[in-house]
Image (cartoon, rainbow, N blue to C red; front, side, top):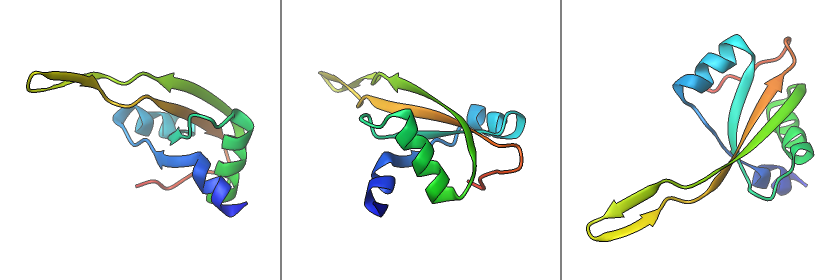
Length: 94
């Protein structure tokens, strides 16, 4: 079970917008497995960080086009989850 929890969460997404959301709305962004659903993401965040999750929003992000010389390709597609925590809880990512 422990490995399954860590397979769902890949990494926290630390950006300027994410930092503002953490302070203003108590919401944190994570890169998650593309196969993970909202219930699995909620369970993984609660187990790993020991917090109470109020809601989870997900979005599938398309890869950006990139060029290397004359060859064109894209970065990989990924899934983003924004997790809103209970007001009494917070995550120290920095």
